[in-house]
Length: 592
Image (cartoon, rainbow, N blue to C red):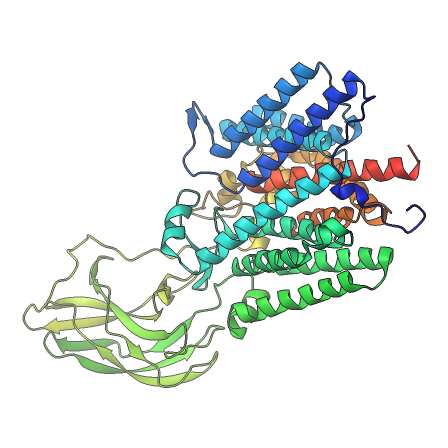
């Protein structure tokens, strides 16, 4: 059927036919396209699984497992081109901003004040993303190919989603397998943030947000016979990906998923009106909200959504006698007055119990004598701002002496309040008499853990702007922000894993005005492609592509993703698919 307002989706399930009259040149081009389809699909499937240990180490550089897969895909594509003796027609107007960004990064790396090898590695990542973008355009010229690539992305997202859920459930065999891809679990305020095969929860969430949006595009295209049967499976898959993103405890994840649902639903309604597919999207939105509501306690959800970090969640003021005295063989009780100065309720009998305890520290050093003290429960939940009196059970450190007694609270098996950012330890003099009754840490073998100040986003953003002010044209080198921000944020110890938490500021600080201009150019082309995907009258797959682009753009305001293989591959593929789809819409509009 043809005509305005009619969705042109029969191509989604059609194979790429090869008419008998096709010329050798066109046949060769089809072989190249199919090779690109297989290669891009393979990259989507392996992108989340980048091993911690590189496959090859070179002086100043390394090759990861996913980068090795990328090289194999490039070799396959080059071989197909060589055998076909043809070059694909690439839209250089779309490739231009990618090439400009890589060039700006390369120049910035060569002239970087420090860490040039790291900046060069980042330049190589951007070059990889550019090649993936070009391969995707070659692969996605036909609607059927775009459908297959989106299916591959959704399958990859479903696998990641299942692994994230199993990670959150702490399934031992899964935890052991995931240790190949990530260093350990992430927490915020003692809440586990599942990561699946990714290094960080925000990276896992971004990947899931992209695949979730692409899955919505498949759902919008499920009005035709061959795809209609996949609708129940798609709904289940999308629910799994949404639950996994929520379990990463990433605030932007919920926002971008709901934004994707709103965009796709609006675009579908504009094309087809209200029908059973639109109703299914409404049900899916309710499922996502229900998953979010049930994922954590209401208090933890509120804390996460209304605070920058966990620094204000757990804090206490303890009024205690200045000195205590006891015998090693006779535990005692000490009257304390404690005020909950944090934002979380202390419930000693809840799912995440908070108990009072203490540590014995050497009098003249930070050496730990005995860390694990007797726990004392609160009789009733202690709400924020509430003050209670408690008789704390106190036992000795196992030997006589003059020590410092450090009062502390513990969220069982999760965190000690004394190790939270900005915590000020409370010490009193403790005198212990009597015989040795147990073992204690040898003097100097264990010391008090340092409380690290975790900089907030505003601090990181200001550091990025100061970095750009000092290096306005070419920045400090791509990906060098994390290695340089400490002195700009006035931090005595800066974690080199921390990024600027803003994709745009990261590029500005790393590659200066020149790189930022290239990113603006790239973003402008992406906006035009996304708009064409939303406004076009062709395949509804474009709705999912526009939603995926929006998810990347919105989440990029509060996190940075270009340094991570899984996300920059997914983003490059989405940009390539959107560009190919927009070109197809243009050809259809002009009847070419």
